[in-house]
Image 1 (tube, rainbow, N blue to C red):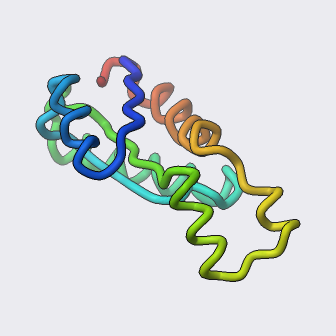
Image 2 (cartoon, rainbow, N blue to C red):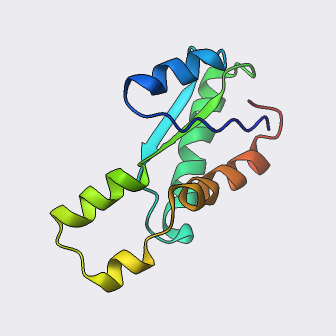
Image 3 (cartoon, rainbow, N blue to C red):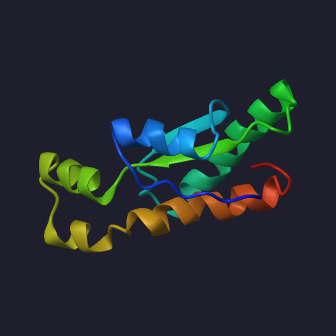
Length: 110
């Protein structure tokens, strides 16, 4: 799998996608904060359904992950404890939690 990481947010995200010639594809987004065994099977199944229905090997599979700043805001809103905040993984770790198994399931897709 051709793994591209785009770290821009907001309007910059669209520019980042265009810079990598990503104008369409199969997308999912989320916090990906729950444990791997709770989220990975669902994400993989969702992408597999999209791949089976679409069949276009050229379409990229895109995972959008809430940024660390966004997650801090979520934690503030839910009045998370220091212990909960300490358990929160970085956006890079949360993205890899889903991207790595997805790349194994779809090794030829961008």
